[in-house]
Every structure is written in structure tokens, then in C-alpha cells.
Image 1 (cartoon, helix red, strand yellow):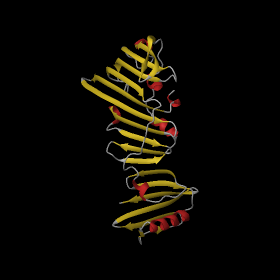
Image 2 (image 1 turned 180 degrees about the vertical axis):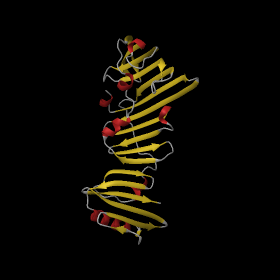
Image 3 (image 1 turned 90 degrees about the vertical axis):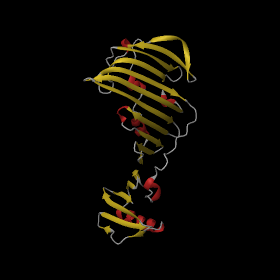
Length: 277
């Protein structure tokens, strides 16, 4: 039912405390999602647990930005199916069905959303092999999506399925159909914002001072484009540029900086790589 909402925010926390071979293991995994349906935009932030230093993914229309734990940003072309892949956690996938969950009366409002309230224990859970579990779930009357889900259980590590311990789950949806603004991260344009690209550019990726993409134009057309555009932007072509029948390596300098543009014939088009320093 989340797909039918104009916008929403969700938060998911999973924690584990247990022991394996006399060693204590404890972690907390968190994921925050912001989603806007039209025009499409999504922000996913994952941290803790097995996610290392964590990362942030932002998709706005056909552009995706990935911010890694070290602050490094990667931008690339994308479509809406890519965003679905990023939303790693979905209640239906993670929780599965609940057999015989008990309806709790009266119905309640959670985050301003009228909900049906259910309670359950380990006998209702068909996955995880928990020795003991207890939890509650609230489902939106209008839309049939999970608004809130909490569970405490004893059993195997839900990630590795190895060591035994205590598992905690908390999931919540809020700000449903309230305007949400999702913007590109600061400083994420990198080389894409500095260097010209062919009008027919596809599959574009940037990372720091590197930019790659594909063009359906001929090698000669792309070469002429960069020689003209770079000169118009104040770049001077160096004498060590190399040009052959299927490859061109163009070198440019400007105010103490260098830029190398490598063009390679690829099928009926050209692969473009720009590196600057």
C-alpha cells in the first residue's frame, strides 16, 4: 500500500544482543526512508549493524546520488526500478505473514492514521525460528499498509542465523501525504557540473573529479564537441593529445589544472571518460 501514498517517511530499527563462542555480539541497524511519488524522489539512509559506516542514497527523477561513510559522493543515471532496489527493507519481505494474529480492540490512530491493531507471539511467525516472541502491529484501514510494527524475540541472529540472542524490531511510517522536499546532497555534482557533456549522454556516473558516460554519436562528433566546448570554457588543448581511428585521448590545461578526456568507440557509439586534477 505504500506505493499508493503521495509521500511518507519511515524508520526501521533492528537490534541484536547475543553470544557466540563465549564472545558477546551487539549491534543496532537503522534505516530511514523518505519517499515522494510524483515527481518521483526518494532518500534512504542506512547506518549501523552490518552496514559499516553507513551510506545515503538519494534519487531525484532519473538521477541517483550515493554518499558513502567517508563523505565521498557518486552520482549516476537511474530509473524508478533502481529506487525499489535501494529500499532494502519492506515490511512484507522482512516480517512475512502473521498467522493467527489477535485483533486488539478498540481500533487506534497511529501518527494520525486510523489503524487496526493486532498482537501476536512466536506461534504467529513462520520465519526466524524464535523460541519466544511478542509483538504488536498496526495496519492502516485505508491503504492496508503497515503503519507500526514492534517485536521483541529470543532466537537466532536474523542476519547470520548463527548465534542465539535477543532481537528487537521497530518500524514506523509517519508524515503520510505531507509535502516532503528531497534535494541533492551538497557538493555532489563534481565533474558533471564542471565539464560539458554530449546532449545524447546516457548511463552517466560521476565520482569526485571523474565523469563517465556513453554517447550514441560518432567518435569524430564527440571529439569535435570537446575540442570546441573546452576551448570556449577557457581550456587549452595540450600537445600530447592522441587520436586514432577508434580512440582519442584529449589533454587540456587551465589555470594550473589538467583535464584528460578519453574517447573509445563502443558498438555504434562512444564511451567517454573525463578525469581532472
